[in-house]
Amino acid sequence: MCPITNTNFSYSKTLMEFPVDFIRFLTSATRVVVLTGAGVSQESGLRTFRDAQDALWAQYKPEDLASPEAFARDPKLVWDWYAWRREAIKGVRPNPGHYALVEMENRIPAFTLITQNVDGLHRFAGSRNVLELHGNIQRVRCAECGTFTETWGDDTESVPLCVVCGGMLRPDVIWFGEALPRAELEAAVKASRSCHVYFSIGTSGVVQPAASLAYAARNNGSVVVEINAEPTPLTSKVDFAFHGKSGEILPDLAKAVWGV
Ligand code: BV8
Ligand code: ZN
Image (cartoon, rainbow, N blue to C red; front, side, top):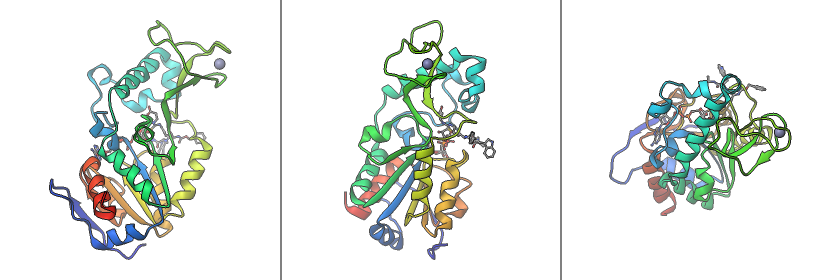
């Protein structure tokens, strides 16, 4: 466990003060890992999984729609939910939190951005070394033969079909009960086990195996940092917890460490 004491900070509007030892540590860190969740896209106008869903979908728990069982039960309902989310994402832009992570990647030799988000906003902001653990909603593939397709009709009575095998199309995201993409998961575990500083940002830290990466870093003696609007099951295990909006805290951190 890193020798630095655990300190909680509630965020205020003035430029945030960060503990000097934290700044010194981050300044000298050459291997940094960041895991993000829905909270990092909240200030872009996207609902988190915890947020009450839009009236249209309020009767459903996200984890009840994001599953092979739900797709088998009512494929059109699940298809429409993803079509609705895709439209919502088209209408938003990355926020200062996304851009601050791009600045960090530009200044840290080995920077790995692991995301649970399927919205693609990190890459849209300019992040390069991004591991999409749970897939990407903008990609669509056949649920039978796996063929990817760039075009599909959204205004159809039924789920669009695969031109190769006639199977139903589905979003290229990882549903509950489905295995994560092997390459991305292995790279995420490897990076988390060998980083100097690990950030958990905008995630409730509930969904596995993503939520266990912070513990892999901690067991490796990394400095573990949480930036989240509220405490999570991880908070009592981290070296530094900054509670507030990532779109405000991250730009201040980039300013404090790299003056950008
Ligand atoms: C698997 C893609 C097996 C789809 C997603 C019991 C114990 C342990 C594990 C399990 C278990 N039962 C089942 C499991 C496994 C399950 C799991 O973990 N379930 C949980 C619910 C207990 N995991 C799986 O099923 C995984 N697969 O295990 O397969 C297997 C293995 C091998 C071979 C075959 C099979 C697959 C998990 C991935 C599922 N897909 N998404 C889609 O998006 O539609 S998960 C999805 O939900 C997201 O990707 C993300 O991971 C999760 C939501 O969490 P967050 O992103 O953290 O969002 P949330 O809203 O919860 O929190 C937001 C936070 O931000 C809040 O704390 C809030 O305070 C904060 N915040 C808000 N605004 C801001 C902010 N912070 C800062 N600034 C702000 N402005
Ligand atoms: Zn097919």
